[in-house]
Image 1 (cartoon, rainbow, N blue to C red):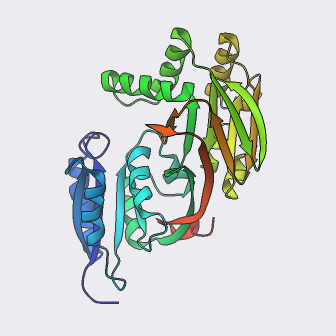
Image 2 (tube, rainbow, N blue to C red; image 1 turned 90 degrees about the vertical axis):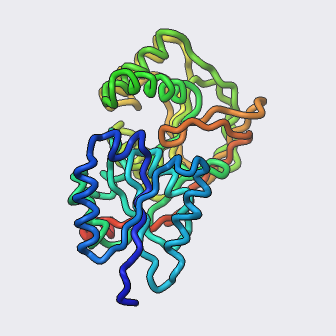
Length: 312
């Protein structure tokens, strides 16, 4: 490899990155630490320019030399990690993570320290690990994707976050708010490995992060670890069922809620009479054309992780 400094690009979101977390001083410390390991650092703020594709084209231009690829770092929560990972699918450039989110499930499942200085050391000295990325049509999710009530939870949670700050409690408060004010029911056909099942459901949830699924005591956690599409469907939409669902969700026992069924498959297609469905992917809302085709891109990303976690 050339003796020239390796390019390191930090992509962050002002709403969830160092500015939002009041970590400007920490940022300066991280830049100093990474520079000491021989990296040439440049930061890119999502929204500058407004077109994220144009931003990532600028980022990728720094990482074209096959003998000096460097690393692209996503600094933020799940949405920021998802956006960066989407552009690094099947790329030789590895991705680093500076966890600045509320739950940081991606960092945690990969054993990346939540302490930012330690996470920076992993970026500089860690090993590369191939990571699965689940995909719905042309969008990916690293943690989860969902239809029905959950996108409403996300929208309500962001409203609470803006007024009360980013608190884990807001995830449950927003869920209770949505259940009290109304519910949304979807009439769909779920096609799992070629077999179709008609469902009327208020919520379908797909998980790609085995740690998050294990925290919910879902048996499909191991399926996600093996690179299968792992899903949960709720079969009833009356308020009593949904309140019981929320209660078991808060206790981490969602599979004990009534009329909740988990499944796994290599390929899942969701058919609907609607031309578009609202989908939440890693906390971000998208309108997607039907049918929704869901699969897992195995080993699609290279992520810098601690050496001890490289073979996990």
